[in-house]
Each structure stands twice: as structure tokens, then as C-alpha cells.
Image 1 (tube, helix red, strand yellow):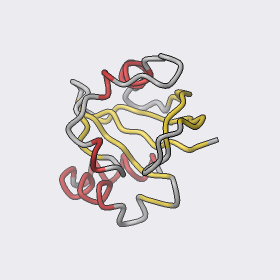
Image 2 (cartoon, helix red, strand yellow):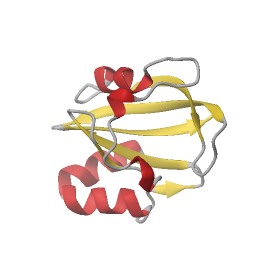
Image 3 (cartoon, helix red, strand yellow):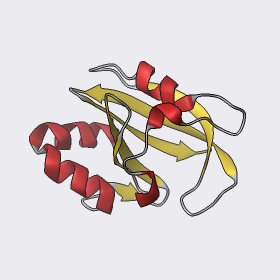
Image 4 (cartoon, helix red, strand yellow):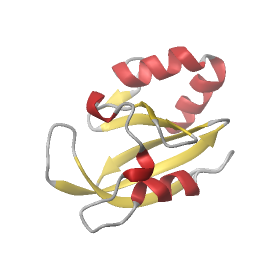
Length: 116
């Protein structure tokens, strides 16, 4: 899904971000979804509308791990990197083990994560 998201961003950024937010065009499958942030950490695409416009750099998991900063610093253009952390499923509050695959696409950091 992340590889398709990269192609979508490079083809039409605005349409891609809209599709990621709506979960259309195959960009949401059960609890899999694409998230994207600007380089300052501002959320531009997320399955949970409450996350939009928040700053990924400020997020820590239940153990205190600053996973948002790790996602932002781990993302490299042309590479996919895995980041593990605990995060609640959409609509829930209990943190669950999660792994996200992240990459940088120009001035965006995007990822797709799955709950273990």
C-alpha cells in the first residue's frame, strides 16, 4: 500500500491526500491506512480525522517512546523503514502493538502501519 501511495503522491499530490483521508482508491483496508505528514510533523492525511492538523513530533506511545519523532527522523527518500510502537486502533483508546513502514516523498513523510 505504501508503494502505491508513493506513486499516487508523485502523480497528483492533492488527489492522493484526499484519497488517503477518505480511504478510497484502495487506500484503506480494514485497519491498514496511509498517513502523511509535512516535514514539520503536521498531519495532512490520516484515517482518524481527529489526528489531522496535529503534530506527529509530539506523539509518544503508552511507554513514553517518542514514536512520532522516530517516524519523522527514520523516513528517507527511496527507502522504506519500519518503526514499532503502541497506538490505539481508530475509535479505541487502548494502545496496541503497531509497526509502521515509512518513507519520505519530497516534502512529505508517509507511512502505512499494521497492528500486531
